[in-house]
Image (cartoon, rainbow, N blue to C red; front, side, top):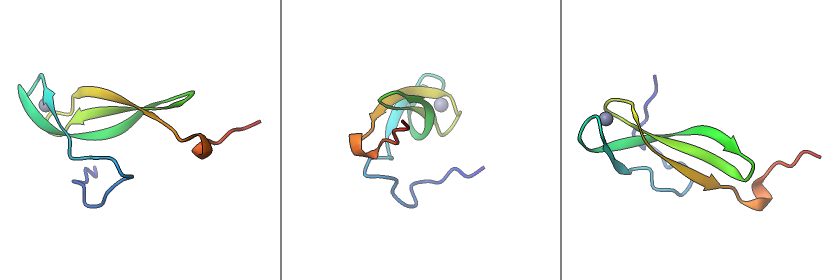
Length: 71
Ligand SMILES: [Zn+2]
């Protein structure tokens, strides 16, 4: 598995976020993955890098001109 540690930046968002993990009982570095697509954006999930459990989600709203509109 490729768990890259911010070797290069993805988009302009901060990736080096630390969130509190209930399992590890401490703030841990997280990685982000795409959870599901929404009509107006995407839902990203934060996973603890130590135990892999989900520690939070974030909704990313897409730019209007970035959307692929099929009509
Ligand atoms: Zn954890």
